[in-house]
Length: 249
Image (cartoon, rainbow, N blue to C red):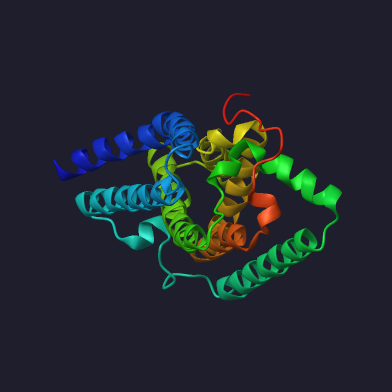
């Protein structure tokens, strides 16, 4: 009975992540843009609600695991079972990410006006989501940590386990593609370019997770990627002079 309940709850969560969350995220962003016209604190409130929702979803994963009699290792949220070369791979991947992300920030801060304007237009689809005040940046730092932990548990942990539950013979390539697509679509509010980019990133995180056998490196890199937003110059987080519609292709 408990296993049946776990299967039903897991399928409901997957449906939420794949079919409901993308459209819900799109609508939430629309409402944020509208709310900012009259409520200066709307962006921070948006962050807080997102943090709560993410941890609630992880709580559901924990309930599913308890009903199914499965522990953290089943979603790779452990380091006790790693292969002997996994620690070296973790250091390699995380170290590479630190260098790459740090280099990108230096390039942005030292970039020409033309480069800054190019970045601004790339961010214009979701520019109202980016923090501007000191309080918003502090709150967004919590968003970054939450997203890094929760999204990896939901997609690279629970998501991979669910696909393999449906198809025990699913190979790495199929998992990378399926989870990458699901992760990309979840960022529908960012427009086609954002969906493609986050889909590729999601696929890369899945590959790293499968290769190392743990969520740890993907979590650390994901947190660093999102924390980079806190360090962006104000010239990138302000709206472009000719605002682009926040939704739609």
